[in-house]
Length: 177
Image (cartoon, rainbow, N blue to C red; front, side, top):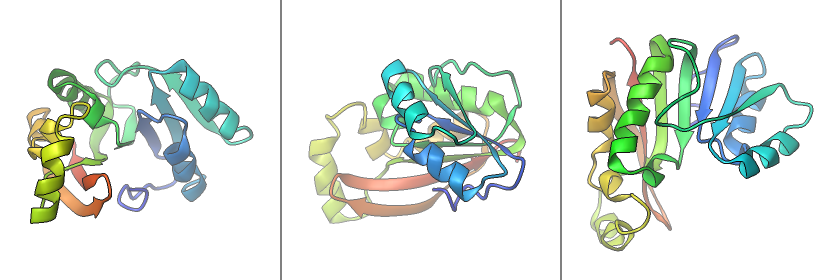
């Protein structure tokens, strides 16, 4: 995900649903000249993220994916990892609209989350996993459609792979293409 995001110096990057900040720290360490923000709705995990990143220049904000606490067109990249499957369908759609709003023109979204199965094994796995959290939309392959409905262009599954927990996909999209 860090490589797919193609972050350049001085870019403004948002890690949406950053949790304890592992990906956020990876982004900042890989791209020290980028302005990296981690955002999550849970005060406890943000406290852990702040402690983990002591001495590293990362902004930590509290907020929800369906109502981002940022003005329009401020980020060059928004990345999110294993967050979308936690959201109900309506909040997934709202989250992608919010991401579209806060991205600059030609800004990019990069999503790593459960995705559509691409084999007999992963189809079998998802029959059980689709009842967990709100993952059915993901396993039904609806995330790219929700992203496109939010206004994004060049929506594509850049990569997919199998884990012990099910199929994962990296979905990429561009604002204004």
